[in-house]
Image 1 (cartoon, rainbow, N blue to C red):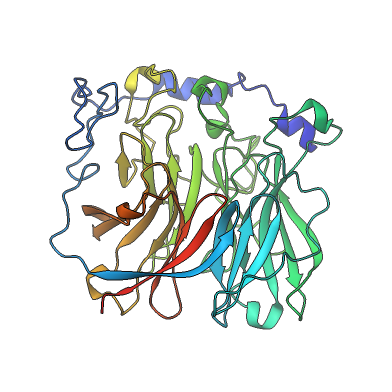
Image 2 (cartoon, one colour; image 1 turned 90 degrees about the vertical axis):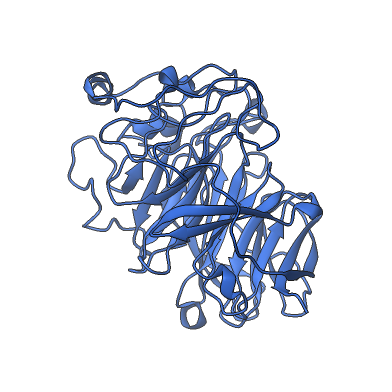
Amino acid sequence: MNRTTMFVRAACVVLAAGAAAAQTARVIPRPPAQVGPPKPEDGSAAPDGYAPSPEWLGQTRAPRPAKSAEFDVITVAEGLSGVFCFDFLPDGRMIVGERPGRIKIVAKDGKVSEPLSGMPADLFARGQGLFEVRPDRAFATNRTIYLTYTVLPEGSNPAALPRSPGVLLVASAKLSTDDRTLEGLKVLLNAEGTSGRLIQAPDGTLLITSTVPGGVGTNVIDWPQPQQFDSNMGKILRINTDGSIPKDNPFVGRSGARPEIYALGFRDSQGMAIHPRTGMLWLSDHGPRGGDEINAVGKGKNYGFPVIGYGRDYSGKPINGDKTAQDGMEQPVYFWTPDIAPAGIAFYTGKLFPAWQGDLFVSALLGRSLVRLVLKDDRVIAEQRLLTDLNARIRGVAEGPDGALYVLTDGNTAKILKLVPKK
């Protein structure tokens, strides 16, 4: 199937098997949604008063933590524009991806390089553009980086598709020895959707998000693909580093299923991290209007969208009667209503901040903060908002090799900031 066929797949077509399952599945009894006046004093409800009931205490609106840490904020690099991702190279430098299709390297002294040459010639910058740039775990010896980006559907006219999200591709390339050029670009996978995040699992395979095009004015009914096994949209995908399909993927050999699918039922996943203790994939996922989630992702599991969720359509209308749970579908570890628009996430394992050990940090775009989630047995027991005084959209977060926490702000005047213990 070519890119055009994938891209123009009729959004209203739902697999008969999926529809039948949705009709016969038992709905778990639960208290009604707490609908009432807005509660701006604790941020517990959407502007229309929608406040869905959690499945367990602490699944949302967790209390503030008893312990925290004081820190100073240092500007490491600035002058970045449209930046979407950053990661560390083995020598401590950072590699940064900007959505219009630029990859830059940030030196240890904060100097930002010129954009690398050798970028994909078909990268569609007017669509979604460049999403992920991630060095291979053996980068020091193989110079390999992975990237995700969008291209136009085959045979399409750019002038006729001014708002096209494009088609998501996953590729690998080598960084030249002079750090100036991408060499040997190889497309590994047509991932079909958009917003492609990528991370390397402990076993060396690549995990990729492929989401449905979304945004204000996009109705859930327009995008049923997260529950369709013949579509990569709304999925976590898993491939080997050469683009081949791992034999132990959960749906290999299943009739009508894409063999690269690892998990399904997501909307717009914008952050990925590997749990340092369990090796499990965790991710952040945007709900439509409310219902932003953190999920711990298991192989072959279904995370529900758009059958269940803790948000509503952008129109304010309930989704599937505000259904938030169903047999055979997983619950998020945590959710937010109203939205915070979660982006990059990272677990903290460094020694500079003992009070943060094992915590999950979540970048918040709409929430304009860095969210700290304190975990116990993979459940959230406390939530804290950091960097609120910056009033900046936060795009990414990562632990540096020095044990500091690094934060990427969003927009055309983006910066990389460094959190260190307060002197």
